[in-house]
Image (cartoon, rainbow, N blue to C red):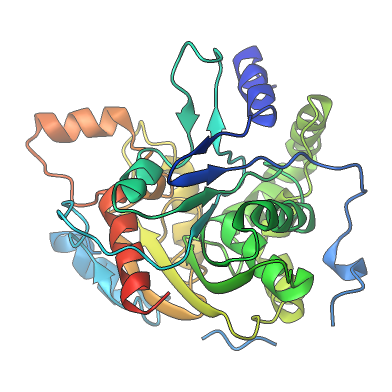
Length: 354
C-alpha cells in the first residue's frame, strides 16, 4: 500500500511549477491525453554497435569479477573536492531526470524551500556561468511519453539553439529515444552524456516482474494509477525489453556525440541503505552496480569511466544521512562530491568545444 505521505509527495510532484532564474531555465511539461504506445507498435521504428574504486580487499575482488569486461577509468577520488574554476560550455546544458524524477517539488508553497532532484548541482553550475535547462517529464510514464515531453520542453526553453543533454538513469533513455525517433528540428543537440542509465536494462526490474510481479506488481501499479500516475515505464526497464526491443529500434542519432558513466558501490550496503536488497540482486546477476544499474548496463557511446563507491542516488547528491553521519563519526572522508562531478563534466564538454 502507498502511504498518505507518499501520495501527497507524488501529487506535489505532478504539480511542479515553472521557475525561470537568470542563468537557468526551468520548465514543466504536463502529460497529455494521448494513449501510451509501446515500441512494438510505434510506426517510427525501423542494431546498434555500442561501443572510482573501493579500498583493499573489496577493490581486489571487484577487479577480478569475470562478469566485467572493462570498467574503463576507475574514478575513485577525482571528484572529491570542488575546484575554484571550471570552464563553461558555449551552449546550454539540459538535465534530464530519471524515474520518479522532477525538477523541484514545493510541499508548502513559497514558505518552505523546495526539494530539488539535482540537489545543489544547478546552483553550482550557474556559479560557473553555465546556462541550465532543467527538464521535467511525466515521472513514471512510458519512454515514448517522457521523450515527447522532453522534446517539447527543450524546444520551448532552447528556442532554436544548440544544447548538450545530460541524463541520469532513465533520463538518458528518454533522450536517446527523442534524438533517434522524434528527431526534433527546433533545436540542435550536440551531445548526450548518460550517467548510470540502464541502457541494457536492470536485472532488479527483471526480479520485480518475475519474482514479485505475479502477486504484488499489479497492486502497486494499480495504486499508482489511482493517484493519477502513469505506469508505462516499469516494464520497459527490464533487460529483455531494452536489449531485444528498444536498442535494436533506437539507433544513435547522426551528428550527436554520446558519452556515458557508470557507478558502483564499493562494499555491501549498510543495513540502513535504500539499496541493500536491490544491490545484491543486481550483483548476483550482472556484477558491480550502484544499487540499481550495473556498470555494464550503463555503457553507451564513449564510456568515460566508473564512479567507484557511489550509489544511484549519490550521483544526484542525495546522500544517505545515516551513512554520512556514521562516516563522519568514524573519520572516514567522502571520496565523491556530486557537485564536483557535474562541474568537471561540463568542464570536459567545454574543452571539447561543446
